Every structure is written in structure tokens, then in C-alpha cells.
Image 1 (cartoon, rainbow, N blue to C red):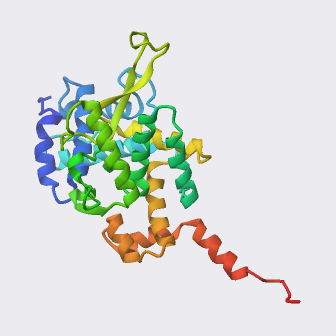
Image 2 (image 1 turned 90 degrees about the vertical axis):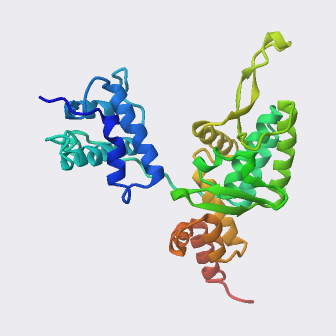
Image 3 (image 1 turned 120 degrees about the vertical axis):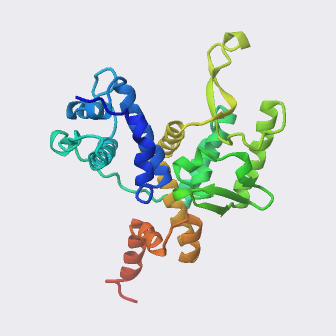
Length: 328
């Protein structure tokens, strides 16, 4: 059998020929997955990858243990492989598609659908109270900013962790966001959040011992430090100024703070959802909510808000108020 090219060799051509169908953000994700596949089988060419190789990659980690990832993630990998190897057949790079049997050989358990959460204004207040009560004051302030970018600006998780100081205009009370599809938008920030950001900027500069660089990440990681050599009896979490927080850590912050106030399954997107719901409750016009949510159409915004159970509850309660009672 003639040896074909490596996966990494044909990636550029694959994306060039499918440029109109694969968005730039999707391209980055797919590139990462396909490069990981090549690293798993470093000596194998495209035409030497088998159906069993793909199945093992999806279901097992590099040590042969079952992967601890969501079924939706594994289904996504399956889609990437179907697209890539299907194109390779079309392009004449391989004769047979090793991914063609994945749908039959990999039966993924359906994921339970997690109920969406719309927080009330009181619950949002409780989240920030939990941060203020943190024994580690700096960590509490950092966590409050993670939450704030969700409930005060409606950012998605991947947008939250990428915020840099240069993205802020604190005098104008705005934030520049590069969102889905590479679309740049300007989001207004409420005064109380701007005040929190001004305070964090001062603490950040103090921690660095110099002015904050515009390209520095705004949300930082915390690392173990402050052990006996610092006169402490046990190690404590210390701020790593200039070191960006990861998506996993930010997700855990939201989940942990939610648990503290009695919402144990709170997720970052629930913050964005609550942002939209509170704007609607406060009478903000739908077209304005659509703008700050950065939706491509107002229909998307309507769907976003339509499932809010509080709207149904309030509507039904109002309609039935007084039913069955008699005036004296």
C-alpha cells in the first residue's frame, strides 16, 4: 500500500476547500482535535488510520482508560472525523472512509437535559454577597468579576476568560467583545461593575508592583503558596498576577458560588440567561436586549426569553388572581 500524507499535512487544504462551511472558531477546534488524533498515532498516515483507531480515540484516553468526557463531546469528535475523512475520500487522498461505521459502532448515552436557570435579582445579590464573605478577600473579588461579566455584561464562558485590560474603557463604561463568528461588539457596563473593575485594577497594579499592561488578562489564576516559609501553618491560595484563568476554573467558580447560595447546578451560561431575563423584567426593549446579547436576529432573543418559567408563573398567577373570591 502506498503511504499517503499525514493528517497535519492535508489540514490546510481541507479547510481551504471547506472555507465557506467551516467558521474560523470551528476551524480552530477541529484543528486541535485532528492534531490530537495524529499525536495519538504519530507514525500513521491518513490512509493508515483505521475505524478501530478512531473508535479507540473517541472512547479511550492515551492510557487506554475510558474517557471521562460528556457524550456530546464524543459526538462532536465523531462529526469531525466524518467530515474530514469523508472529504479525504472525495479528494482522492484515501480510498475508504474509516469513519463511516462510527455511528453504528459507537453508541453514546444520551445526555440528561439540564434545566435552564434564570436567577432573580435577589439571587444575583446573594452571589456577590458570597464572594464578599470569602476569607480570601482577593479571591472573592476575582470571583465576583467572573460572575459580573456574566450577569452584568452577558458574556459567554469563553469570552469571560479572554477579557484583557485593553478591552475595557472604564471611563466610557464599555467593554469590547470578540464574540461568535469573530464579530466585534461594544457592551455597556453598569456603574457598580465599573466600580468593581476600577478597584481590581488598583489591586492588580499593586500586586504586580507596576502599572497594568493593556494586554494582561483581567481574570487571574490563584496558585498554592504562602507556606511555612512565609510564617503560615498551611499553604494558602495566592494570586498569580498576569496568569490567565482557564475556562474550567471559571466554570468551577460559578458552580461553587451557586452551591453556596442554594443553586448547586448553576452554570456560566445561566448568568448570561439571567442577564437577559433581568433586562426584560426591568422593561428593556426586546431590540435592545438583542443588541447587548449580540444575537444575529431578534427571533433568537425571543427564543432565549420564551422558556423562562417565571414569565409563565407570573402570567398565570396574574390571570387567576381573585378567582373564586367574593367581595363582601
